[in-house]
Length: 280
Ligand SMILES: Nc1ncnc2c1ncn2[C@@H]1O[C@H](COP(=O)(O)OP(=O)(O)O)[C@@H](O)[C@H]1O
Ligand SMILES: [Mg+2]
Image 1: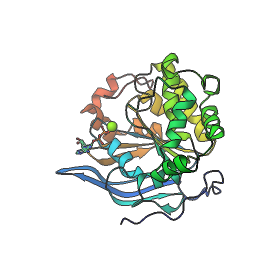
Image 2 (image 1 turned 180 degrees about the vertical axis):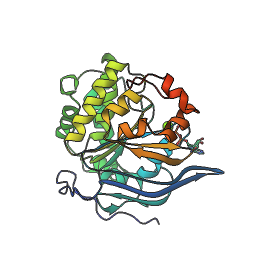
Image 3 (image 1 turned 135 degrees about the vertical axis):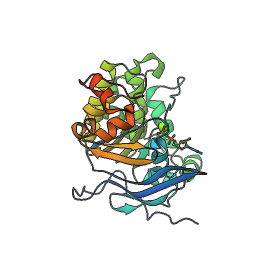
Image 4 (image 1 turned 60 degrees about the vertical axis):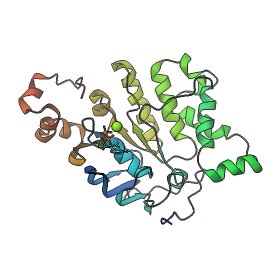
């Protein structure tokens, strides 16, 4: 049996934040798929209240990293949440400890309202919860849902159906779904795909608001405008390895990053420098 977690903290009474300690601390994470080292010795941290970007070309290993941190794939290395080791714990235990994710191309249920989409997410936190719901019965966690919707500014559309909302709001429903139930750290896997520049700017603003409440945010996205604007720090992944990290301005001018993305440094000088470029 894999090592499991100590009893998870009560999400309502989240422990005080220790600013000296990262909220999410991944150390030397490695994931191998057959002959592919999809994550190669990745060390990455996110502090409470921080928005951290994780960028890299397709196939670089970004989703694999989220899978490894959240327990959906086997990994070597250490993962701690607020100082507690969680590697080895089952995904639902990590979720209960306050670590949540979104899925790349995660779909909403269009026959449910926005609030019901969030309720479904809460009810899927584990087998035990399911049994408890069946045999004991629990009141719908309406306060948690309301809180999550409020965090991303969606309170007024709680009773509407997602397909009737603007695309930017639909994407925020996906984020809210991951914030329900005492989430302290959220990993967002391309949550803004398909948004136009204006929508993605608003989306970035909402992520900053979420982080301002003390939640840690890891943002994976190809939209460089969004990533450069919304993130405090950025890590760049290529072929499973972190090749650079730093503030947005450090990363965007790093020759190693430019080479990894564009193949030749001189190509970036031809690209727009106002933060509008899109990575492939
Ligand atoms: N479940 C899996 N089984 C085998 N190989 C995988 C699996 N998931 C991802 N990979 C491989 O791992 C590498 C990283 O993929 P992924 O993490 O999806 O990259 P990204 O999200 O950055 O596009 C790719 O070579 C991909 O083919
Ligand atoms: Mg991916």
